Length: 259
Image 1 (spheres, rainbow, N blue to C red):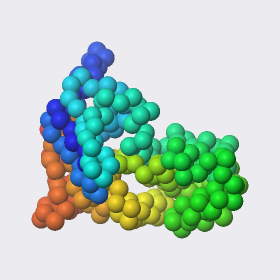
Image 2 (tube, helix red, strand yellow):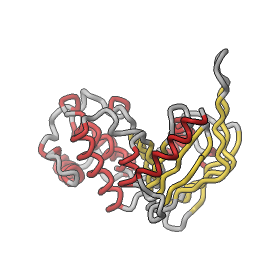
Image 3 (cartoon, helix red, strand yellow):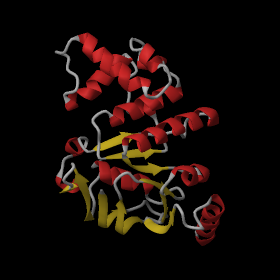
Image 4 (cartoon, rainbow, N blue to C red):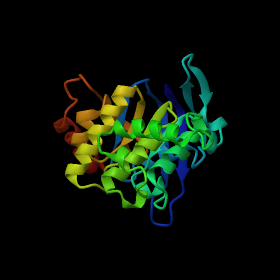
């Protein structure tokens, strides 16, 4: 589905701080697989997301993406950032980075759907409304009954679910989720997480999820990749005896002792 080969990105730090190098020799995410990336601050999680999205360019290496039913392989670095949007869905930590508060829900969703040609401003509004209601009703938050509400009036949890909905509208090949429940209270974070993971499983998306939450990773990941100093330090695979929260904490204690 997505394959990373010999990927490198170096940052020159200011005086008194060490340079940072992201260095991933080989790593892949399979179709329908949910892979959690976890690691201390500064381990390379955000850099990896930025490289995949095209926000920054690599010093070396490639990221291949298999797209379509015939698995046509493309090199992401051969595409402009806006071209990658056809294949990638991104949910940021802060919904303000994905939403326009002044827009109402229906116009926001129609705008997001337009590239897929499933809706159009030229279609009868009733048809567009029916499709948007169907999409939003899948998340069981009642958003389908609030189509004329402005996005700015939604709660934090509702905003993150809407951000996720927008990221999936054009049926991307892979979803990138960057600590997307970090700003929510524990109860809402759990609710949103369960809705999102259930939807990912149901629709068969592949997903790369960044988090600091050990329990969340163990509960929902098919595989956990632990990054440290820009490199994959260890992988935990569901079904293995060491795939548990206790083992994960042991690994992190080991990392902190080496820093």
